[in-house]
Image (cartoon, rainbow, N blue to C red; front, side, top):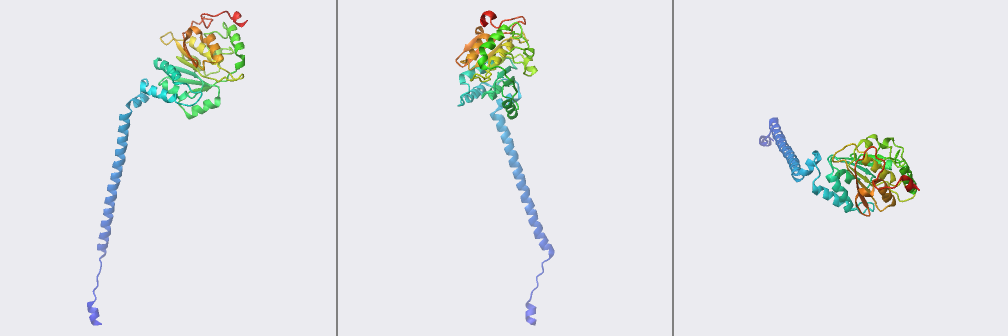
Length: 311
């Protein structure tokens, strides 16, 4: 018993030794965490800097175009036209039609005022091509106009209520020609007009703008009760002749789409005039109209009297 007790050894661990080991591990963990966090922050910063530099290097023209007031580069315009004409939509314009209108917009004095009758598959294209200009759309469908403005806030669209019917084409043209010295004269402010073919319920500022380019691509008119494009063509003719400025941009380019239609041909001859037709295909008519004096009372130079026409 005594010998066994003499061989027993007692080992005591001082609390300081345990504390020192735990403290070293904590310092090591803190050290590793610090360098891991520093590495992650450096990696994120480097990626953001590289991405910004790459964006600036790849598309300086696009960046400067979005901020500046210069025209779109030719390559951008050609690319937009190419992809816009690739659609299988049967109501879509062909590349030739798109280019014809685009060429006029490209030469338009800046800023260019562009009025479009009809919200079509090309709506966003027209807005993009008239870069830094003013583009306004007019459509007969109030719900679609509201939808387009909500989905694309950059679009400036208004709805209009057409009172005409396609089946009344000849009667409306004859009635308009009878009133050519009064309500339906070629130079006037349509806001105060009672002419049956004149659109007088658009926002006031539409009548105050000197429009440089007008495109008639709506409303549709494939059935007798459809509104037809009589009113937009007549209105375009009046707006073009009633411009206020006597300057280099006193001329107005008017395009009429679906030029094969009876309404488009008849109203084009009556209110835009054959002598102003500079280019035409089966689907697109291009007129160039000049500003007229306020005392002018005929749309075309070569025209028969209203009585003879209506008889």
